Length: 261
Image 1 (cartoon, rainbow, N blue to C red):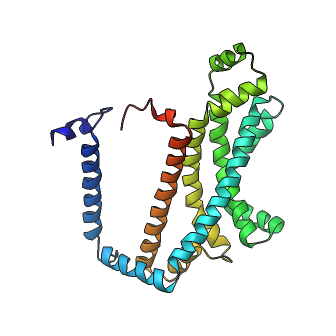
Image 2 (cartoon, rainbow, N blue to C red):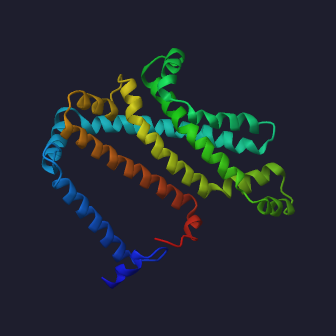
Image 3 (tube, rainbow, N blue to C red):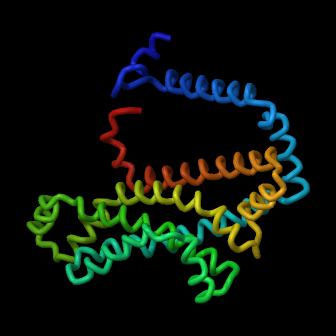
């Protein structure tokens, strides 16, 4: 128990055993709070029962797979678009245009749905377009900041090595800032994951976990709603862990300066 002492003070390192004790403690506390919730709120038993019914009767796993495929496609397109535009801000003539695009994050998807539908129709293309727009509006803003935060000293150092300006961009801004770029991707992927159910609720032609959640919400099936939300949350944890693994694999040196666990 003495190892838990540093966990109560700011900016202290704690051993792995103490850290996992804290995780287990908070997990037990949350489960107790859930079990002691008011009677109208379904307990763990009812939620597990509803999850089994959704899996066997309404294809919960298949709907989740549909949603994951849609999200992966949208995230890939949004990543290519956002990173490409952000790196173009190194050219002064293109910078105002890209900065103007970052203001799209203040627009509402609800008001733009009709415009996207008129241009693309419904179905899969509409959902991909809405997700790409929603993710890119925020991811582009983060990536512009990642590019702008490169110290001038690093640029000058690369120039002393007789690199061309485009080589400087590649070595210092693209490769040198890959760690912060992947952090921005991970954060904005979570924003896109939250938008997924809303987009699937707008166009239900292919199903998906969002359409399934809307159906349960329509029938006020609270236990099933919680079951779908738990599955959705766990899938979000997995995609976040996958992006964290990607960063650790691509830029393993990025975590060497971490002080806190």
